[in-house]
Length: 424
Image (spheres, rainbow, N blue to C red):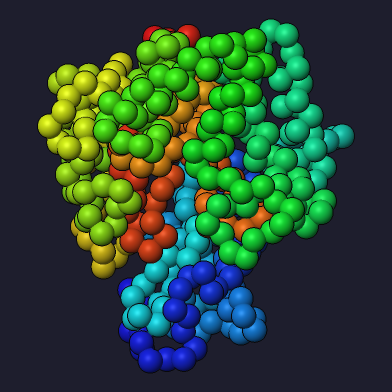
């Protein structure tokens, strides 16, 4: 545990948003892998890990006795440098940095990865030398290359609908970040952000999904199908007794009009996440919807705002992906789950080229491609690269303070051909 906090200590931050984290690992080679950042390190060796936590306003150094590093199941106090012994086998280790805030509680500030692997040997002249594979940080050059590759997929005559949709989804993220790298400000800003950028386009979780779908249907020559989907989504909305479209309305329409398949997801449906930690759901929702998906192969079928009227189609479920990330709340927030992790179906889901994901009965809507969720944060300004963010499903929607999944269940729909390839 961290040292006891003093809630009245003026040196302590009120929120993790007020703090900036920097981590350095030596020896090691820094790289990024998707949304993860970390270091390639050699199995069986010892590395030095140094933590730097400063206040964003003024840059003052955060007190050492309020900082804790957890690495390889061992806790370290303060900034270090700390000597961390690495296991002798290949594995992925998470460096977890936590801080005590002014509320007297411990909060997770950030995570970094250590990719542990045996040293590899490559012939160099008459001897051998240790080599490490690295990937470049997302510079403008790297982003430009990514954009060119995605543009090529979109222009290719043989690209499938899902290949087009996945490319358009990734392009939204890449082009926004490329604009930041080159101009200092991105293409988009969240609809609820402040202050507003007059040159940026407002967007939210639903708008990006509809934009990507519209572009993919159009590029594939199926604009008429997309028009039918939108008409059916409106009919579904009315069948729920609502006047505002939800992600679930569109998912049900994609099933009805274009034959898409439904996948129920929940990282740990048996666990009762406290209602206060969930967004748009109660503690029993994951357990109840998982039971219905298992028994009846449906999700939110016959749902209506009045609680009586039936007829809403909901989503028909062909596959469940569950128990892939048992709940592991931050110390002091609750007990760890006793669920045994099962990632067998998650591995299959990662083969799914494209899908539309919703959480908690359509409360939130995103895209998913090869197991990575692409979503919009409506509260982020145009200079933030994470207005559009990509996250692995198993680590997605985890509260930075509590460690709970704040989106704990939902559904994905995907084109039938993709579903059949991923779940043979």
